[in-house]
Amino acid sequence: MTAPQGTAPAGPAVAQSAIERAAAPKATAAHAAHAAHAAPALWRSLGHIAVHLLTPLLMCLGMALAYLGAFHQPEPHHLKVAVVGTTQQAQVLAQTVKDRAGDALDVTTLPDRQAAEQQLRDRNLAGAFVPGGKHPELLVAKAGSDTSAMAAEAVFRTVTAQQGVPLAVTDVAPLSSGDPTGQGIFFLLVALSIGSYGSVAVIGAAGAAVGMRVRALVGLVTSLAVSLIGIVTAGPLFHVVDHHCLAVWALGWLYSAGIIAVGTGLHTFLRRWTTLTLMVLFVMLNFTSSGGIYRPELQNGFFGALHAFWNGAGFVEGARSILYFDGGAGLDGRVLSLVLWFVAGLAMLVVAGVYERRQALRASQASQASPVSRAFAAPRVSADRAAAEPADRAADEEEMEEAVGV
Image (cartoon, rainbow, N blue to C red; front, side, top):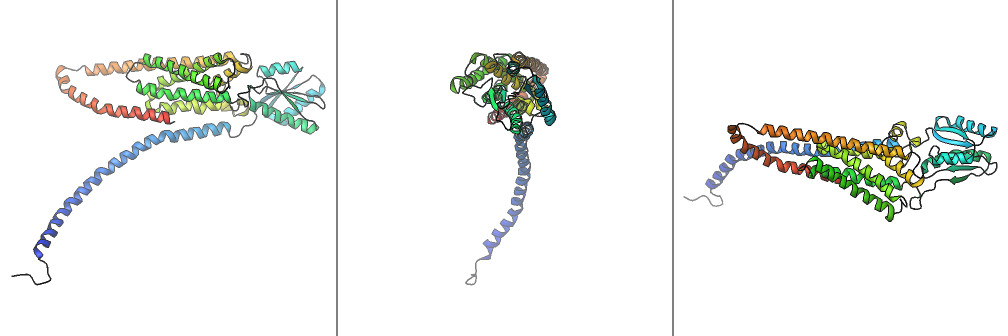
């Protein structure tokens, strides 16, 4: 018999439907298994991303706290100024300025103009006011700090405005023509700092196969290269440093060597967190307390306290002393601070080297098992090492990429 005209045979369709119904549970089970496997992998990937995002987010927080905390509201705090003269009028003027300013100013009197100029060259004053009837004068040393000189000028322009006379400003320590704002040394500090701490991750990660002595030597040579790049660009190229180039270069080398020594030592313990730590030490706390933009008398007490001994302040103030104050104005103390930072770096290298040797000794002792144990353990150790090496290399590459990216 044949099927009625206009109808299809039912047998093949029923068979196909039965096959699809039988396969559906298997497909559903496979999809569920795939989803169950994909979910943990997704969370692991998100966790990996989150761990690496933690570094830039912490950098963002640290930079915001440091820079806004240091620079958002510059105002005088015990800014040292003087009134020149021994007359009754000079004494009264000094006391009046002090009473109106409160803690913002420390006002003294000096006997004559020569004493005032010497105090400015010794960097003990931000400004010295010389009363002169219709021709008053303010002495400043812009090479010590242009912003502090501007603050002193603002104070005494208020005084002369009340008297209805103009104020003449005389700079006893002018800046170089290549650095009219006095901030070129600060930007040289920035270049030296980035070149130094950026090199630490490379030395620590790419140099992990060599001993600490070799890494320390590489760091010393790297600091030499960083300091040479700095002095060539700041000197012959842009004329920020237009004399005493050798002395400023030596100061830069000492500064860079200290950062690299500290960082290379810390890398043994901190690994991929080294870059963040160095940014805290040598960017967030360092740039803000260096005095390159505002000296401590225009900042809050925290950054002012750091200015006394932090290495960035040692370089900036030391370079200013060399370039504009004939090697005086506290140069010895600033050089000493840089030497102490370098010594701290050497101590850190010694501690890290001892730690690495002990770790290697423990690993060697742990591998000295019985012959039977070694026979069974050796293939597994080799396999584990082979599996771990790509991950270690990837971590090292990530660390160097993060450091360079920063």
